[in-house]
Length: 144
Image 1 (cartoon, rainbow, N blue to C red):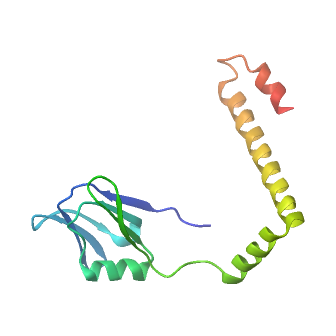
Image 2: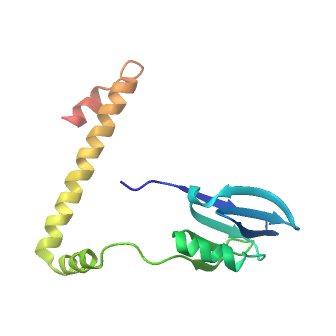
Image 3: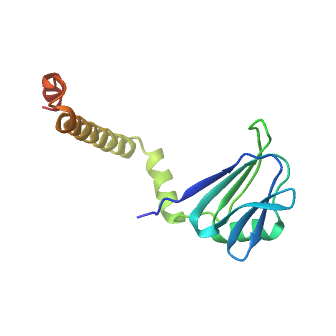
């Protein structure tokens, strides 16, 4: 199972990202304003033009942490990320299946069945959590 980590949003347009050991250090006008271990992060999004040190960007690429640079208005400027993850053979097979209409239809039907099963679970949870407060007969009927 994939561990979900955090995305850090740096909104100060004067912030500069630097490396200190295995830590991210955010500096504004040469003063350290934030520090965190890099392994807590999955991605970093910055708003502004100050940038990041080459050593910090290299560490992020090495550890698979994506850095996105946006201008102060949110327009994308650049993104850095490490080597792509995933299985090339799996990806090739997925493309082959996507080109086959019969196999695509089978997959689509399984996706739809999964969505229906999950929707039923959400409705049953609603009945369990709120059945005493609200009239749930219509929701119970939808579950059957």
